[in-house]
Length: 183
Image (cartoon, rainbow, N blue to C red; front, top):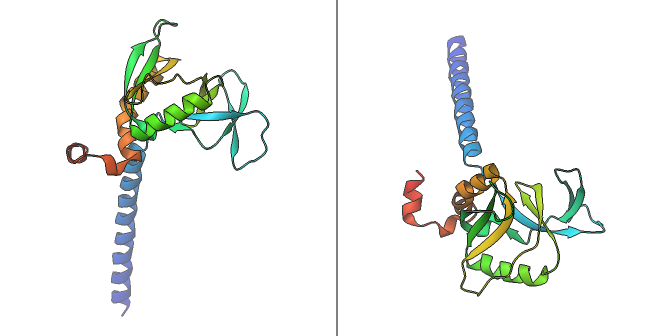
């Protein structure tokens, strides 16, 4: 009887140890596939009233802004990004973003509603800059210019992860070739 209990205890401990290793590997894979360089545009709130709908973000210079947590535009609408050298700052970039159809609709609404207002541009939930959206030339235009200037590391990170983030946020829009190329 004692031998059976010891044997059972050994089997259970081996299972627990291998289970932990499998769990650790799964956590590493999840961390590797976590979206990075997520862009979002948020309305700036002048008089915060609700902790659930508004959050405080701090700019690099220490300025505090309150923003609406519900973003008006997000990386889930950005299919790809291209770097465009900034006209205002040497060595920095603007971003040319290819957006999907729902992103076009949101951008049109965004550019009309916030025509003369500043929005908070957040990257991975951290304040990056104030931004006023430009209007699209026409409704069939899939590319929009996000004027920065963005530093080279941030711009290249956004470019690198734009399509990966799009697939992560829109798994049903992924075509068959992309599914097999990501394996």
